Image 1 (cartoon, rainbow, N blue to C red):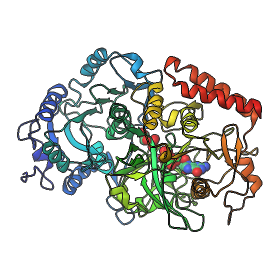
Image 2 (cartoon, rainbow, N blue to C red):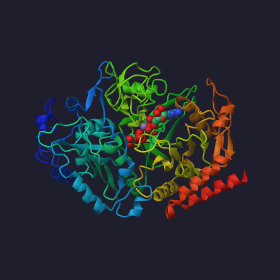
Image 3 (cartoon, rainbow, N blue to C red):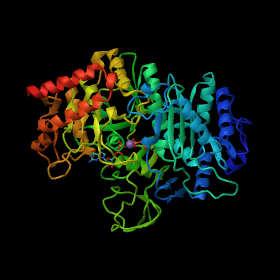
Image 4 (cartoon, helix red, strand yellow):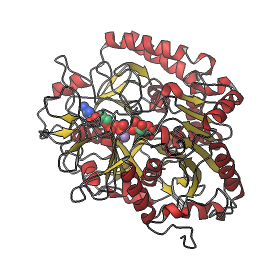
Length: 623
Ligand code: GDP
Ligand code: PGA
Ligand code: MN
């Protein structure tokens, strides 16, 4: 049934499932074998399956998922090898209320994280996971975040009872036998154990549902022993544990200890008309425009954009003192609504190549997918994400606002070749951004590096559908990491300051604050956004080159009305001035909000940042 690499022949996965946890397991890695054995004893699965990552295996798994009703196969003419999944309506987003950082000491988790005593949490998890995989297959997925041939590859193994998770992890990360072999070669390398169960054991003969999950959900991280436990949800950010749980929460702790940064950032490459290359990374909260900016189709003459990453960036200071960025992921898990041929044609072209899994989108009558904003023309008839008939007269959206496409990154035509290089790229500029209707200008350049960290630390945004809870509430989201810091927020900001303090100061990137979401008095967007954001990127690069004009304000430098290239755009310099206006009355309220925010850090706020706040207040007072 299995070839020598442990691969199941096509159609024979069922037979290979008879393998026990260590019986004939395709590895000799002692810690891995022991952990798999221990989890199997606890969770009591019907079978254990070691994921190889092969194409044949994926075919078998997706066939099984189609049969089970979890996946709907899309029309192969228009969406080859692609599937739609529809979740339980109560399992559609990350659950921040149920996300925990269980450090030994409460103060190490900090005020931004939920915390529970680790011993108490372990007891709780043992209870939840006991027998939680009964009647299901337990899949073991070796994975690596970042390059397999990185200097210090970051391994993980996810154990899950969801084949949907296996198929999605295969898109989002490098997984399977190659990873396992590399772990063994590197003296049975350390891996982050990441245990996931949908929390829906099946009794003997009990029929399964299309999207098993549990009312009770727990997303738990033990930062000291670098382990992850996820229970009750099948949704991306909760269940694809290489992504937010590992590459941000656990990696941020590794980064603190090892002297680097794990950030919620995209990376893009810009080439100027003079053929000079620049790399820019940008941190925006979930559903605030990372994927769109990363895949931007520039509207400004002579400038080229390529992408390296759309969600997570690992930053390290290189041997020459420059800040270098890599993308640890292998796929896109993008917000579907608003992604369309007019706003994001690069994403649409990548999706159209197939090999994608869509979750909670609507289905067209010819076996395709649709979501709000995908095409200008709205189809006359759809099946909505809940399985109901839908027409343009329906008063609910056809796709869930947090519906997603999951697509391999190498299907992006504009993928920069540097994506494939483990050394990463040197970053020239960092953008911090959020979703603010008022107050925050379209773009502001920080006066200096520490002012930039101040901007990042006070970043704010209106909440979105990417997390369960109210939408549209302004909250502070430092460096867009609020839900993803694996340790104390003040210590996190301190780490930014001390780490960069040791770097070559002349090579530190310039920092900018952006806001694509400011509104005008009549309620419209003050800036057209999407591809037009290339005009802002052009200004950013021209600032680095000392070419673009700016006006000094108490919060930093904003563009003059005519320093943003408006050629071909129906806008005037006065519109730009309105979009970058710093209103003293709005900022009085804003600074009061920042006071409150900083007060919550208690003693852990770096002094450098309270000094910067005082400096900004002085500048407003003097203005
Ligand atoms: P991510 O979760 O940070 O990657 O955010 P996405 O790029 O997926 O975008 C989230 C939502 O914001 C989508 O509905 C987009 O259509 C919308 N969006 C992204 N960029 C812009 C922009 O420049 N202007 C406006 N108005 N909306 C945007
Ligand atoms: P995002 O991440 O919302 O930042 O795109 C995906 C998720 O965690 O749900
Ligand atoms: Mn995204």
